[in-house]
Image (cartoon, rainbow, N blue to C red; front, side, top):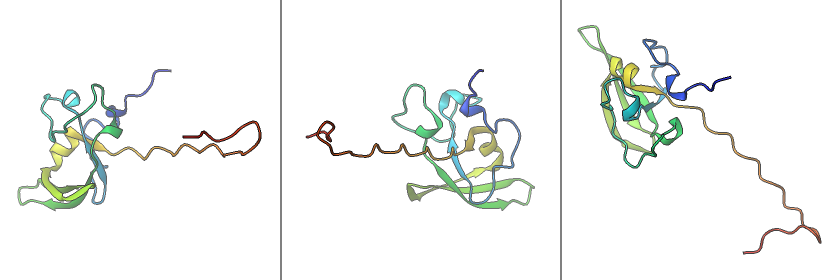
Length: 120
């Protein structure tokens, strides 16, 4: 069974994920339709995953007089970094943030005569 491409989730014209309070990530340059990213990210790996991208939060959605909508977003790691984007641009060049990766369970430390924790 072929693996699903994580960048293709919510692609197209669906806009049900662009809601107030949603966490979103920008598409990398090679995934944007016109090869022009909406947000430039430095130090990306060659094949970035959604977990490599910065996470933004949709703070406001404003309806304009001409019928278009604007969204105010901010970077979750630095709330002072804010931007305003057209909702149509968000649908085209952004995707919902992936759920957090599950934590790997730690191996219990068994102190015995035969198996000991590593000594540094």
